[in-house]
Image (cartoon, rainbow, N blue to C red):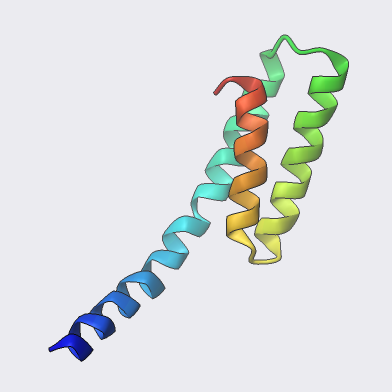
Length: 80
């Protein structure tokens, strides 16, 4: 019985991977939209753009956990 539960959990986590990967593009699009009208200092704007770029690079490299971490930091600065 425990083996079946472990197998079911492993399958659930494997199937969830692509779902998490879809969050990155949505976050990048939200950041891009918010940047158009955000009232930020030049340094904050540059920081957001840097975090967004690094988040995209991490996403493209398949490191979605790092991508989400970086994009979350950008969203925090933008207050979205």
